Amino acid sequence: MKISKGFTLIELLVVISIIALLISIIVPALQKSKQKASSIWCLSNLRAVTTSVRVYSMSHDTYLPNSGRAWPHMGFLDVPEMLLSGQYIAGDSLHCPTDKRGEAPGIVSDWWRTNMGRPVDESDHMSNLSLPTENSGDVDYSYYWPVKMYYNANADYKKDFSLLTSWKLEDIKHPSALVAFYHFWCPINPEDYDYLPHKRDGLHSGFLDGHAEFVPIGNIIPRDFNRDGKPDETQYDDPLKRDNMDWTTNGILGRDAGGGYN
Image 1 (cartoon, rainbow, N blue to C red):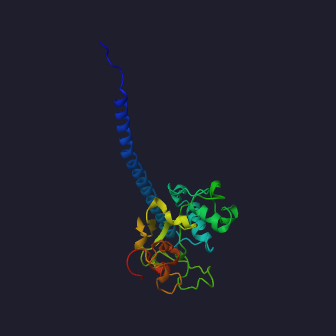
Image 2 (spheres, rainbow, N blue to C red):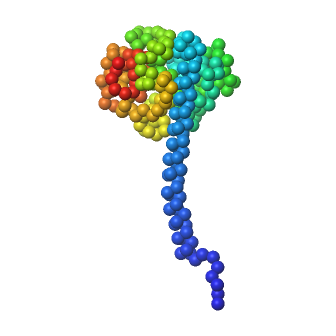
Image 3 (cartoon, one colour):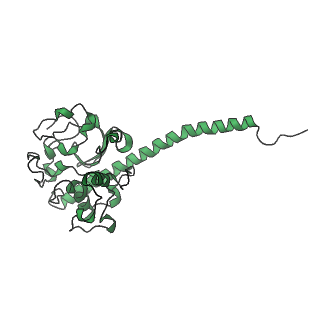
């Protein structure tokens, strides 16, 4: 009597089918877990960054960091590097693990190459800062300190974009509703409208009361591009145009998230 050894073809196909089914169930779950972990990591970074701003301010008579340089250097490079230089924060906290865009190391560098026509180079950094060697040129920063954090809300940006105001922590009227740092996103190409950090319809944001949260774009107050204290009606019904935190109604005295403008 012959004893069968090994699997029959049918048994083997059944086993393969079961394995394929298990993989189809497990892989999406693992992917979701990975995305969730990255989201938590990003929010943790944003809490660390905004907390470092508070510590910096308390060490400077409550003044918020201000390099004296206008956009785009202030928000993209100067404030993060003032925090780095003063050892208020570690460099790893300025990069989100999901931030891999094009050939650049992060969204800030990608924006710089696209809009400035070249990579971030040594001349773009402030000469009086003591930075690690790897930060002397291109950078892997993911977060942005918006213009409204130092720009005079009543100034006419069309006449002079470099009117800087040194604000204090106590000047912030709505610290729990005013986005101080956020995972920067800016549409560069038409297809970029399909991309948001963490592939969700909103922005990971850090607030100067010390908390960080995901803010759905639909919950962001429409921007006040003309700085006349009124929402930009042309963008009001387009949620994707609400991501520009530079044009907060009433500037640092206003709010980005939640109801109302004052």
